[in-house]
Image (cartoon, rainbow, N blue to C red; front, side):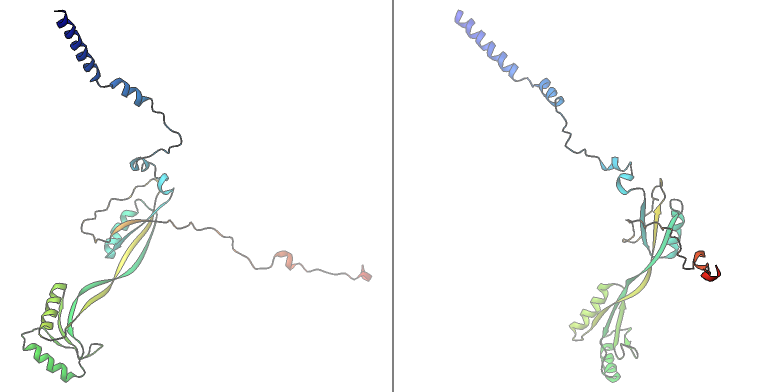
Length: 241
C-alpha cells in the first residue's frame, strides 16, 4: 500500500512539472519588447504619404511641369484655360512628329514607260485592281500596287506578288504633324489639376521639369560722358596771374 502511495505522488509531481513547463512565457516576452532602446544613430524612416504632406521636402518652393503632347491646338487651349486657375506663368511650344499614315506597295521604277506598261498588263491579268503607273516625280515609271492603312494587308499583297515572281516592295508612308506642349509653374499652395486621361494618346503625360531662373534686373550701361568730362579746364598764364 505504501508503495502505491509513493508511486502516485511521484507521478503527480511529474504531471505538475510538465504542465508548468508547457505554459508560454507571455510576461517575459512583453517585458523584453518594452526594454528595446532606440539607437540614435539609425535614421528615421518616413512613409511617402507622410512626405507628401510637406511639398517643400520633395521639390522646394517652386514646382514646374510640362504637359503634353497635345495633338490639336483646341485641346491645348482647353487645358490652358484650366491651368490659369493654378498657374500665372504658362508658356507654349510646338514640335513636329512623324506619324505613320499607311503602307504603300509598289513595283520599283522601270527604265522606260514601255516596260512599265508591259508589266502593268501582266499584273492586271492576275486580277489586280486599283493599280497604275506613276508618270512623274521621283517614282516615275513605277507601278503603284495599292495603299493600305494596316500593315498586315500591305504584307499580304506584297507576299502574294512575290510568290508569283514579282519583286514588290513596301514603303511606310509618314507625315509630319504638329504637337503642342504647355510648360507652367505651379502657384505656391496650389494643387495639380486633375486630368481625364481616357481617350488621350499613350505619350500624353505630365512631367516635372526644372524651373527657369528668374529674370535678373541689370542696370543699363551709359557710355555717354559724365558731366565732369564736359568741364573745360581754363589755364591762366603765369604772367597774367
